Length: 81
Image 1 (cartoon, rainbow, N blue to C red):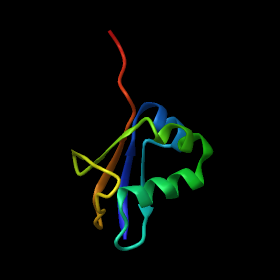
Image 2 (cartoon, rainbow, N blue to C red; image 1 turned 45 degrees about the vertical axis):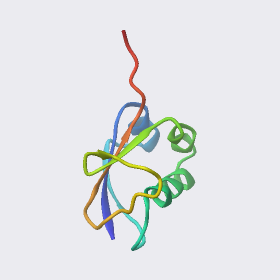
Image 3 (cartoon, rainbow, N blue to C red; image 1 turned 90 degrees about the horizontal axis):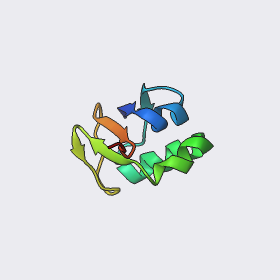
């Protein structure tokens, strides 16, 4: 199945793009997708532990299931003052 991946700030830089589509196995979870991404890009693997992940606009846990066509966003921590 296919999911839409959105990445912001450092996650986008590590991924090499801000938006892409990914093929994942039927029944995949957020954890499965993050393992796939980490295996593909070392720079992304280094920052995945610090990002929040949202699925269809709702913060997700590693066990959150993915569905065909869902939108997965990688949200790095926000800093500022």
